[in-house]
Amino acid sequence: MQFLADYFPLLLFFVAFKWQGIFVATATAIAASVVQIGYFWARGKKVQVVHWLSFGIIAIFGGATLWLHDETFIKWKPTVLYWIFAAVLLVGRFLFKRNFIAALLKDLTLPESVWTGLTLSWAGFFILMGAVNLYVASHFELDTWVNFKVWGGIGLFLLFGIAQAFALARYMPEQS
Image: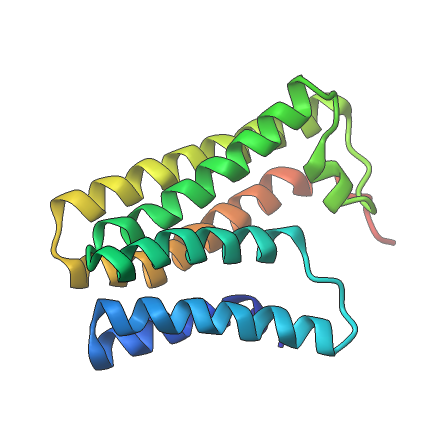
């Protein structure tokens, strides 16, 4: 259920795009982000920083898309979000000496070098995802970009997450 709540705006964006095009999809994504935050708030759950950040970026870039009637801005949104995530991980790790991935996975005990490697891996992945998004957005038709943004993005995150889990498996305690 959490997965559906997290991806609610993205899935509605996809459906609205296929039904009515990019401008209706963009407006739908903005509205769905508001509903998403309201849903978490109404259920008494803390609205995660990622949801606020995503809402802020969709409001700004989606708003520019609607106001200027230019799809370019909504195409930039994923890249901006990914690169902000990468920057937060890298700045947190190297400037503030905090490892945000370790904070998220607080039940996991790993050597510091592994935490650093994990942080660098995710930061690199986010940087690469942002670059790939820009490439697809600028070299392919809008429909291809939307399909990539939704299904390619989810698929690549899933594959990268599985690869990370396999890499970390050797550090898990053995169960008897």
